[in-house]
Every structure is written in structure tokens, then in C-alpha cells.
Length: 78
Image (cartoon, rainbow, N blue to C red):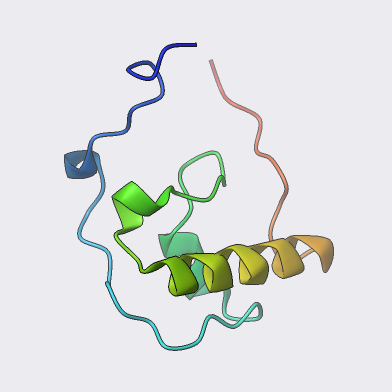
């Protein structure tokens, strides 16, 4: 897989809030902003979060998935 194949242009997503102090795994609406249509976590180059906040986001999403609040995957519709 080439790097260009997995590239996601920033313009495809609406403006995301840059600074979120705390990511709570119960707050599903906030977490859904940082997930794509297949419920994957958006990369840092798209979210433009700091390293610390991107790690906090990842932990919160993974906790929500383990508790069943978020799905692990969504089947693509063709």
C-alpha cells in the first residue's frame, strides 16, 4: 500500500475543535466527531490535535468500545 493511497485530505472533514481538555469515554457525541464513517479514529494530521490530546482521544475511544458504547467496526455498504 502506497502512502498516497491512505492519504486523507484535510478538506474532506469539517473543521474539528482543536483543543478539548478532557475526552470522556461516556460522551459519545464528542468522540463521534473524531471518527470517520467506518468508526475508525481519525489520524492526527486530520484532527490537528496535540500528541497528548490524540492519545487521550484514542484511550477514550478504546474504553468506549470495550464497554459497548461504540462499535468496533461498521460494515461498508456497497
